[in-house]
Image 1: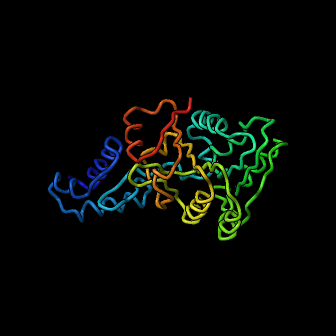
Image 2: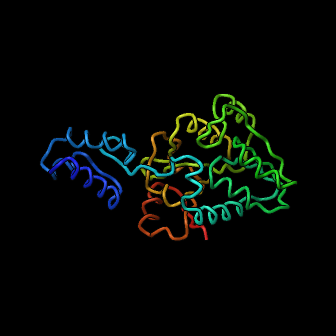
Length: 252
């Protein structure tokens, strides 16, 4: 089998089975594991998959820039945002991550909601400014333009001064074995710190993030209080996600 054919087979298996085990595929094709691992490395360099110990998982397509992500699963993200907004109770202290779904959530909050929202996203803070009864606390740091969030030690140090009822965490990958992940190391550090400061953490995950993985692990899925997914998510995917030890709820 030619190299191009092997790579296409690998991508096809990722699409249909959700993972590739290097040893199994090598035995099936009668070639060495080194050959398969080389194929996986080259595909990973192209952003086609995420390598893990022993093989590969589908790469998240949610790692593009903010403008691109705004065009992906827009209807799903609006439904997820509406569901997330409904989880916030008056008087709560809420941490709101950056990202396109978080921005939608901010826009869907009731206009008369009284709450405190902590965020490290300038975009989210501006959207919240339209809600006169919400106190907005900004965590400052170096602006990471890719996601339009502040990152760095100053964000993590500031987060340590708060205790929140609820954290809406943004991720690019949700996988029962690989956990919750994102595409930048500093972002992952900040997300872990915010997660540690909240009584409950919720992830609102659009379809392209489900059963995929990115390079930097934030936490295992079992640490979530709830994973909210699109209403059209299949039973097969729901079963796979629940194997990660998390409560999964459909939006809508």
